Each structure stands twice: as C-alpha cells, then as structure tokens.
Length: 115
Image (cartoon, rainbow, N blue to C red):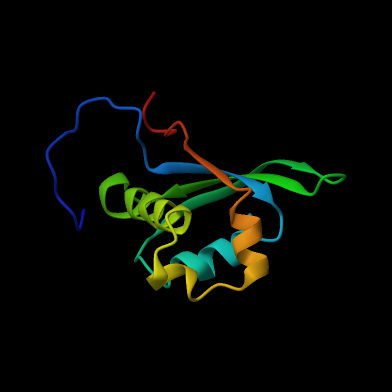
C-alpha cells in the first residue's frame, strides 16, 4: 500500500505541509510545481491559496506534499539552498526570480492528518 515504509515518528514542528508567503510571481502553483520538480521528486495531496493581497500582490500558498521525510523536507532544503546562493539552483534562475525569492518566507504548516 505505501511505497515508503518507515516507523512512526515522534511529534515535531515539521510536517508534510509547507506554507509559502511572497510575491505572486513565484508563490503560485504552476511556478512552484515546475520549479521544485527540477530538484526533487514529489507527490502533492493538495495546494491551497490561503490568502491573496491584490494590492501588494502577496500570496500565501499552502502545499501539502505526500510525505515529510522524502518530499516537504526536500523542498525546504531547496528553499534553504536558494537563500544560501547554491549555484546548482540560483544559476537556473533569472535576476527577477532571485529578487522575488528574497521576499519569500517559507514555514512548516499544520498537517491535516496530525489531529
């Protein structure tokens, strides 16, 4: 039934849900899906627009990955590498994308299956 079998995990602040807040140019489902699939393999359970400020064009998007360990943690690592200027990632980005990513905040969201 499950392709990746692991023992039950203790509670932690991490989950399979990531919340992105930032400019709508990069915080949108088509862009993030295309961008992330260059670096990690993942399955999505759901993508939700939590909030969109039309005046400032700031979007809050919640991505619910299929798993924590193999997917949301990998996506968070990609975000960290962007912040650290990892050449394997930033060399594939335009200056406009880099400017937008400088404004993006990514946090762990609450897993709907955790309650």
